[in-house]
Length: 360
Image 1 (tube, rainbow, N blue to C red):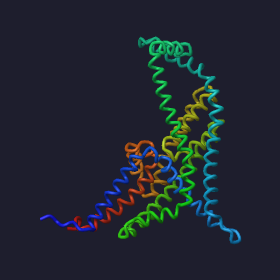
Image 2: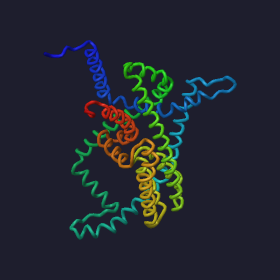
Image 3: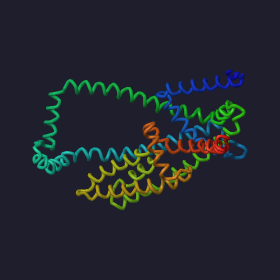
Image 4: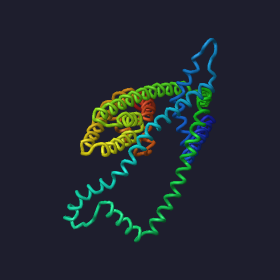
């Protein structure tokens, strides 16, 4: 005889189905959610600054929240602009010098590699004349294919550029309104939780908030230490662009691989342009190799990993796992997402250990 289904069970099944449909809708709308997700992350980071500004007062004059939000958002984007203004002059200085040195680099590469390639039966010139000849032959043999590829890439690139422009325009607008409505929005979310679960849900949210705050403080310490290390090390090695390249490498380290890769590229270009021999390249290899060791084995596990309760192996696994599952965004959010999952797993483990399934 089948068990009768109660009205409460029917309601539970209905609301579970509604939430699953809502999650599927969010997944299907994923491509347009990027600016909203980015703005929500920034709002979480910047909201303490807005609250602190609001608490400041002078002779019973309290700062209105819209004005506090506007000040914090403007200061944040001014900081981003300042970082861009640090990078652009370095690129403007190095790229023309690099273009002037390309023929010399190709000539040296041809002198070094051409004899070895001839020994293998490959006759090719790697200097400017040889490369121009190869490009002209390739254009003559497959010109139609190249033009079709270029046009397709232009169409795709144009769409991507428009998408990025829309994202860049939307993020400040969404960020402003999220910060303006932050506390009422959290209250509405808490009010939507079923009353039987509200206490446990709010408790877990507070734990997650504490862990993420510790993660952000740890990440800021890592950024400051690495910016100082790269700036000082490059200055000792005699690099003229030590300060901007070091600051760029350190401040962008919160995006795994991007800060290190961009800083390494700029430092290598500076080494090739500034030093006549290979001493500059060797110095860059040593400085950035030691920097990666310091960051990967000491700073991130101790200042970030330990603050969110993850040991070094868990940090490495989180980066690899989230990168495999979600790509670049997964790498970016690996550690804070791991903190959230760790809180959920801790409560699930506590529930499991107290269950009759485990104890009987």
